[in-house]
Amino acid sequence: MALLLCVSIVRNVRSETMTKVTPSAILNTSLPASFRQIRLELAREPGHPEGEANIAYVIIAPLDGNDRIDAEIWKKHREACRVARQRPHQPDSLGHLVHRPGGSWAFQYDSAAKLPDEAGYHFADERFVQGEYVSLREEGDMHTFRVVAVSRL
Image (cartoon, rainbow, N blue to C red; front, side, top):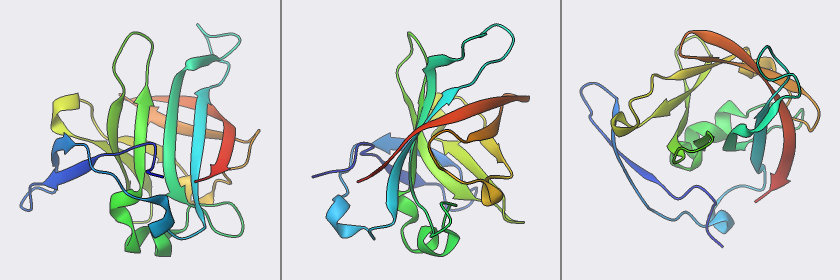
């Protein structure tokens, strides 16, 4: 069975920016058992008093025994750590989960998506458990998302 997010990235070595996304399957049987599919949906905020299931992220990432992103396993399987940004009436924007200097995490999209990196707020400390809340900075604004599902691959 292939992962939900089947993309491969061609990197510009000099700038380390993602330049192209093309389908490439990664078999979940080739990944450690700690890999999870995590779905985040927009929580309540002004303009969305009930939250919004159609404003979401689907993340493929390894979690440690405390349900936090496992940086050591991420290092060994960076290509498999992916994200799909879902918005109503738009195609999904595909990218990767990246670990930045200083330990922060972000979503990095290919240049065709024309999206800036989106930073997770204290993602290294967050537990990705159903019902928990996490924050992301999107285009300069902070938004809270609820973890609605965490499943094995």
